[in-house]
Length: 399
Image (cartoon, rainbow, N blue to C red; front, side):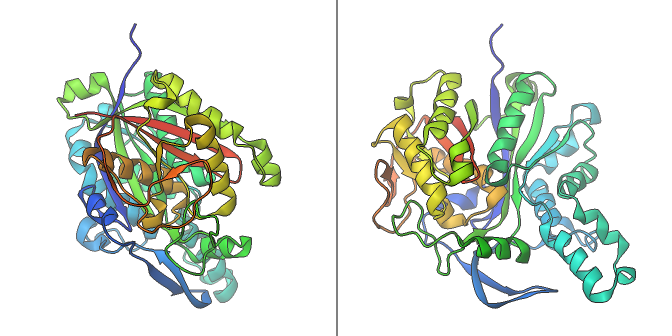
């Protein structure tokens, strides 16, 4: 029996690049859009913090006012992405065949979680709105999507830190190959919050200036971002049954763990290299056939060094490597999925988007600073985190 093929058909995204897949190409051709945050309901920073925020998303316009009062920012973000990208397929499918949902996120509705606790401290436990408690579990946004679209086949939340968005795609890829379902909407979600910003600030990797400089030898840290990127993954049988149009095929995945990076922040890149080679083997291609790498580099010096070493070991010094987080910010659990859609956009436009600013980069890799016009068949999406998780996914262009 021939192995099951998994395709990407419908897509949806809301991020600093804009709302909708068609906005990605335009945004990657311009200078990164950076805003700032300072004041939250219960906490304030001493000064403005640069961040890549959503430029044009109004939940009431997209979703309608009804039922939004108790839904938090992350939930409105995921529902808006569903509404603009998958509403038709959800409504056209009968309950038994409706796509499942698999979302990767590091923190889910972390602003709601922190504010619920802050509210109880500031105003007293007896004055906290009990209806707000529903937002304090990490799978709340996923669950709200299941409820709104009456999905009873799958409700999965993957939480693996920086890798969550890419790991959700890998999980779904394997889930479909096992024959559990014919289609799943999968991707990543993350919000900019006071609590995540404070955590990054205290680790010392939050940049004071924007945009960030991925793979720079003198990087000052990351700039936070937020967004939701989702893809409808379908088996070949489902694509044919629906007479759907595939935009890409996921052909290989790989996931390893780098214990050296996790324990000491020092790694030789071997675990990351293995993740790439495993993905290439599953895809049935040689590493030399990778046309470009959509890296997870964000300006985090430790993670960027790990990624550069892994890419150099697996692919050599010549393959073009870009870093979309220059434009989107470090969207943490959502980044892997956002990067996948950015890579897909570049493939469809026969280009590899450059970072846009030339600076001295880490040795061993070919960082794309100026946009290259190039047709591509295979793109490698990577996410190598300083916590040791290493994930890789290969998408094949479908004309």
